Image 1 (cartoon, helix red, strand yellow):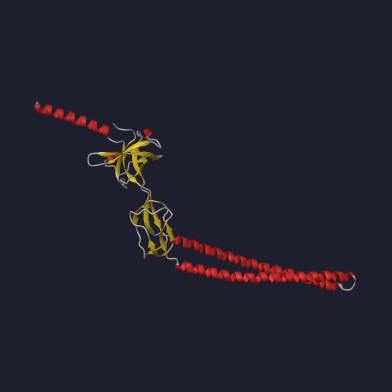
Image 2 (cartoon, one colour):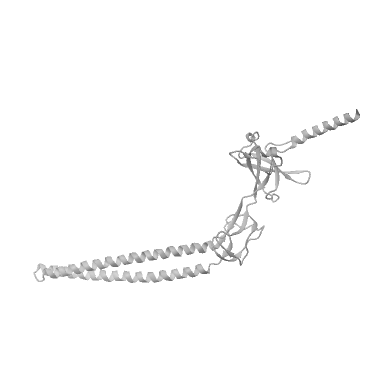
Length: 298
């Protein structure tokens, strides 16, 4: 009889303890994430330097790597010399137009003189026709020269576009860090050969972390965009540390519970993903587990 009473008392204690623990359970569980950006080379060549290390924090827009530009620079010099030669040729063509324009001016003077002489019957109509023919010939020669000049101008524009293309290729050899953050991984070293698309390093902004959790359909009405929530991380083996977070994203559609959930019964449930932005004081790390309460727990 004593054994039966003992069993009943122990059962009651366990039941009471279970109720108490359930009251202290958090609303959701998840892991911290960060937006990770992989910086890759845009050109091919030898890496002269790569000024990042794992854990370093390069500024946004700062030049962190340089890929060899020698071939591109030599090509640019060649194009500039070619443009100079074409420019000289164009100057020569334009000077021919000036000569023809002066010749036309002289012919117009002759035409006026012949016209007056013809009125006094001191010149013939053929003389006037010869002057007009010469003027027409000069006009045709000027038109022909202008056509040549247009072709030379187009040639110079083509060279300018090629120089611009080379300048853009040279610009891509200077690798700029796109975002301020912490370098997570480094994939290349100075002296190695880069190729377009080769990853150089990976960076992430760790100043604000995202905690991704999953909530059930019954919990969803209690979660709103911009809502302040309580986030718990491990302080030690027995206690938690409280942080403040803001709901930044709620999935618009349901999905099956991720396979990382332990029990098979929970894995087949439909849940909604929720992301919570939490300011990082330096203690939060990628993949660190955490808990969240959408309403304060006593």
